[in-house]
Image 1 (cartoon, rainbow, N blue to C red):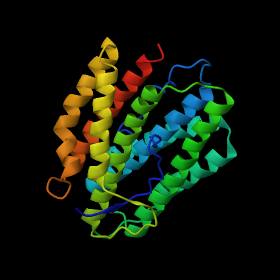
Image 2: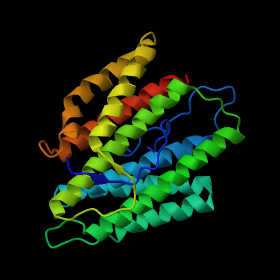
Image 3: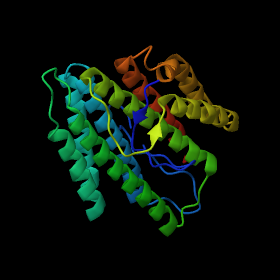
Image 4: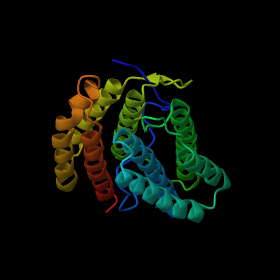
Length: 265
C-alpha cells in the first residue's frame, strides 16, 4: 500500500478530532467531579470543525471541485470563526487564521486539483492547529480539575480517530488524482493501521458500554456502518471511494458524538 505522510503527532490515548457537515451540537466533556468549562467544549468543537473543513476541501478537490463541498468548507470555517472569537486566545486565533489562509490560497493544477505544495501547506497548518488545540484541552482539564474517565475519553478519541482516518484518506485521494507525491517531515502512518486501531477500540467500547442501553444502541449503529466502510480504508488502492468514505465518516462521527453526549446526562 502507498504510504501516506500525514502529520499525526499523537500518543496512544490522545488523538486529534473531523465530519463532513458542520457540527450540529457542541461535544460535551466527559462526566467529572468538576464541570468542564464552556471554553473546553468550544475547543473540542473547534477541533472537529477544523477537520470538517479540511475533509470537505479534499472532497471538493477529489470530486472535480464540487461547489457543494466548498460551501460546506466555508460553513465550517465560518462556524469556527465564531468559536475562535469566543475563546479570545491569541495563539489559537493565529493558528486558525493560518489554517483558513492555507485553504483560501490553495493553487490548482490544469486538471483542477490542488498542487502538491498547496496540499502540504494545508496539512502543515491543520496539524499545527490541532496540536495546539489538544494541548489547550489538556491544560484546561488540569486547571479546572476536570476528572478523567478513561473509557469516555476513548469514546471521544474514537470520534477523533474516524475524522483523522477520513482526512488522511481524502488527502491521499486528492494527491493521487493530482498525480503528485506527498512530501512531509511528519511520521509515516498507514491508513490501514488507523483502521485496525479503530476496530480494536470500537470492540472495547462496545463491550464496556454493553449495559448502557442508549450508548450501546449508538455503538451498534457505528459498528454496522463501520463494517460496511472498513475495507475501503484497509484496501485503499483497490477500492478508492472518497465520496462514500466522506458520507460514512459524517454518519459515524455523529453517532460517536451522540454516544459521548449521553455520558454527561
